[in-house]
Length: 127
View 1: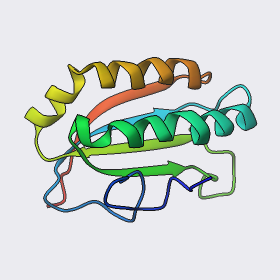
View 2 (view 1 turned 90 degrees about the vertical axis):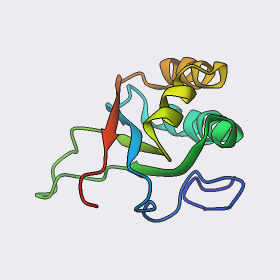
View 3 (view 1 turned 90 degrees about the horizontal axis):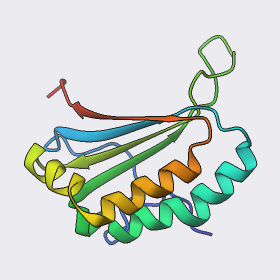
């Protein structure tokens, strides 16, 4: 199985840092799932491949996938995972939200996120 942190031109789910030219993103924060092993299996075998399949069609230019390890003092992180999906413009993001591919990803999110998820639009403020 390919790690979602592996970056490739045709499959941008992963990679370090996003391009400074990309200023708008969809950010999804996942709550802790009811069963972490089941979540991780589905995430790796279904959700990330689905994201990779639709990345170009949706106009996503960069993806950062994060799994939270702990709080700074070593406690249990209050959130489980985060996904940042970067677009070249707000118009491109809005087009993606209207597409059937986005609805399919969202439908899978409903299956995956047994601990809940919050999806937000974010704008870079440091450049």
